[in-house]
Image 1 (tube, one colour):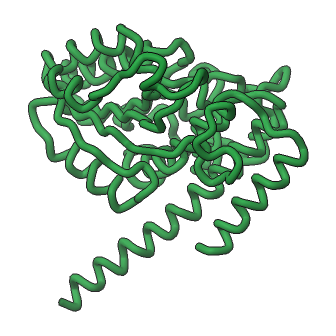
Image 2 (image 1 turned 90 degrees about the horizontal axis):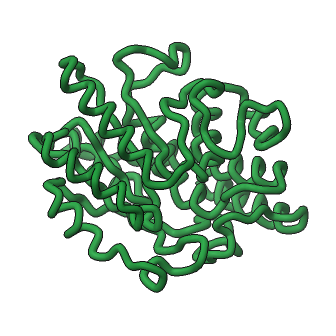
Length: 287
């Protein structure tokens, strides 16, 4: 019993540290978008815990050696949420956190979409919705063909999966039994024009991926125990790729942004920035 308690307490401590990291990632998102006066905070904030878990817990990576041959790969298929990826990379040590304030500035390497030629830790330049998953599938196939052990992760928006190319890629991944591929859906229920089920419903998402021969897992995108269980199950799944449908809250952590489609692609003004940072400071103080 003592060993079990110790393991449980250890997970709680790890989760607390992940929560702290995720809160810093959220601060980085809000700060960078405010500084740029442009960007996509809503979906970046909803995925902040996913970014944090991937880069601080799940993936085999080395910030000191970003091009390590056997590293795990990550493709941000919903490339407009680059502020979330950049904040995670910065806090993981790929580049200075202070550089987040240069988002979208002339001459900055941190532009509105990820650029693999300029940014340490970015494995693929992305931005055209629906295309990132195809690249991830290609990376996973390459690993299989070269008998490499690295795994490939890709994050899609639930509005993004309205794109037909997503399902072409899914069909191929299922057919080729790419069990080294994990597709994560940031299921916050909102896209730029409103609710996804009002605009062009992708539901039932789970049944669609299952039909393309994926192992499907549901998870709470803001619960690190749930994320840990989901990614562990994905690792243990053999003979088929995995889709993790991560239920999330758009704008998570910032009171006036939560569940508001209008914050999909809008920067906070000075007053809103102060409120957002105060919200995140309160969360940080509670951890």
